[in-house]
Amino acid sequence: MFYGQENKYDSLDELEQAIRKYINDYNTERTKDKLKGLIPIEYRNKSLTA
Image 1 (cartoon, rainbow, N blue to C red):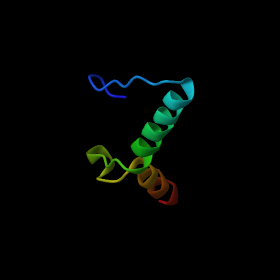
Image 2: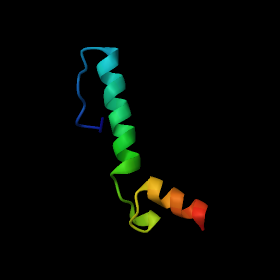
Image 3: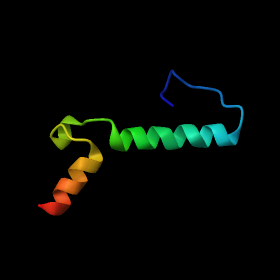
Image 4: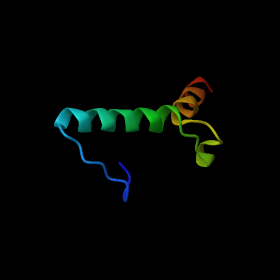
């Protein structure tokens, strides 16, 4: 999924699963300094309740 770390997928379904996993990890696992150390979902939820 990253440049220089390309994978070859045997089917379109495998590629779709990899994309879904990447998006999920991006939104639920990765912290961001710009978001005050929160993951995007936590930051969005905090913004909506403020």
